[in-house]
Amino acid sequence: MKSDSQPWAPYVPTPEEPWNLDKVAHLHRRAGFAANWEELHRDLKAGPAESIDRLLHPPPAPQKFRRVADVLKNIIESSGDDFMTTEDLSPLQAWWLFRMTFGSDPLGEKLTLFWHNHFATAISGVNNLKLMLDQNELFREHARGKFGDLLIAIEANPAMLKWLNGGANQKEHPNENFARELLELFTLGEGHYSETDIREAARSLTGWKPGRDTQLNETNEFIYDETLVDTGPKTFLGQTGSWRCDDIFRIILQQPEAAKYLCRRLYRWFVSESTIPDDTLIEPLAMQMRASNYSIEHVVGIILRSQHFFSSAACWQRVKSPVEFCVGTIRQLEPKRIPNLLPLVALNCDQQGQILFNPPSVKGWDGGTAWLNSNCTLTRLNWIAELLNGKPLSGLPAYDPTHWLKEHSIEPSQAVNSFSKLLLQNNLSPESEALANRLAAKDQQQLRAALLVLLQTPEFQLA
Image (cartoon, rainbow, N blue to C red; front, side, top):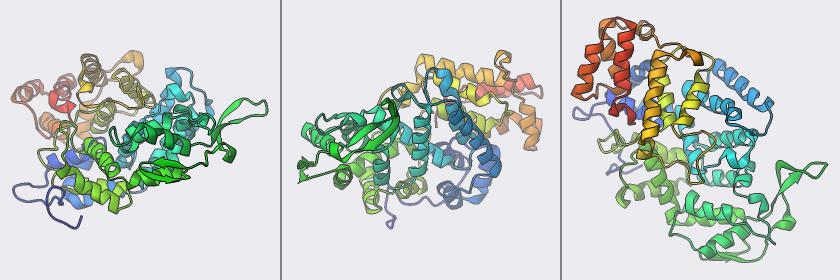
């Protein structure tokens, strides 16, 4: 942004607001899935400009990572398309968790998760692993791009066409499912359109039909058939014409509320879900959104570079989702990479209420304090105990904190202090700090007990 006025002026370190471990860790919790020890100290030394630029413009993924990711993807593609049980979903979840946990583009994966929740599509309605995989790659491809391009792509996406019955929307029998969610959840929000606008949008989005094989059975491909398109005049959001889908998206993005709605969603994702931002916060972002032709990278860059993002109003103002909690813990503790680690992570996310590729409804996950209900919290704390102490029946070995200390050349006497810096940047209540220090010792079991205290603190549940 050209203006240095509040609230989105760039953050510049000062003696009163220095670039420190707290700010580095905050950046990585929000723009990714938490930083490991090496990343914390690398970015502490690099400063905010270089650290944020690395997130916005990541280096190419290492060859070894790409090779493993491709192998996991090939396993999914060769296992058959149809979804039958939750076990069928596990390899797809593990593939994505691998990208989140070990990839070189944490912001790209965080945005992919954002879009998965924004355009919430569930395997329970799509019933096809390949379609869900392809949609996930579509979100990744468009994660930082222009929102209008993503709208065009998602409308024609086979998983979305199945999920919201786009293939049944034809001029003789219009189906309003996608049009309704397009206006209510994807672009404008309630109160900024009418029921007539929904009907007219649905008419403009006609034309798709399911493909058929040689036996005339429906396939998972969709065909755009001009004979099924409603070419008549429509009046949509006050504009009249023989609109088609591209026209509908263009008209939507002309509405001032579209940019504000999307900026509110990005604000909740990257800044705070505990407060509702007023127009003094949202309107400057929305202006930038419109001026950049709805560039997600541009607006996210403004957010991440801003004074507001690094202020006390933003820090520790989000509850970690199960995926953020589990992936972040693995990234920080760097346990031994066993073959079933990520499937176990996927299972625990499922048990905590966040089933990747199967959000509960078209509204996605509620998030926020909903993640801290009694069942989710108990499952979360039990998973931490299993990760640290091991679970032989699942093939999960006990965590070795002394190995982490050796890898980072840290003396055992500094173990609890170093883990506290890593996990919480020493933002502990006096009671938790005293208990962790009392359990500190060179013995692995006592170190694991001290770690359990740190990981089960209320502070660690927050991003």
